[in-house]
Image (cartoon, rainbow, N blue to C red; front, side):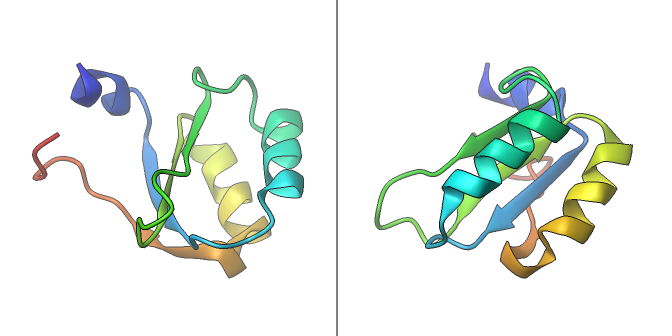
Amino acid sequence: MIRDYLSKFSNHYKLLRHFNDEPFLEWCAESLGKEYRDWSYYKGHKDDPHCAFHIKDPKKALIFEIKWAHIIIGRLDYSSERL
């Protein structure tokens, strides 16, 4: 079920664990569309090494990468991981 949901998104990112996410979430709501439909943010447990972020629209993903490059650690690949 989780794999099906995540497969709807084209881009998956690892983000820094500790950053001020209020301006980030405001920007996402204004620029990327509806949360859980167009994008998804998973902060996880406080001991997790990173956060997960998913975007559906590849064009908006490029804008996200330019705007928020300073918090992007890398990409996530769910094709080979067990969920």
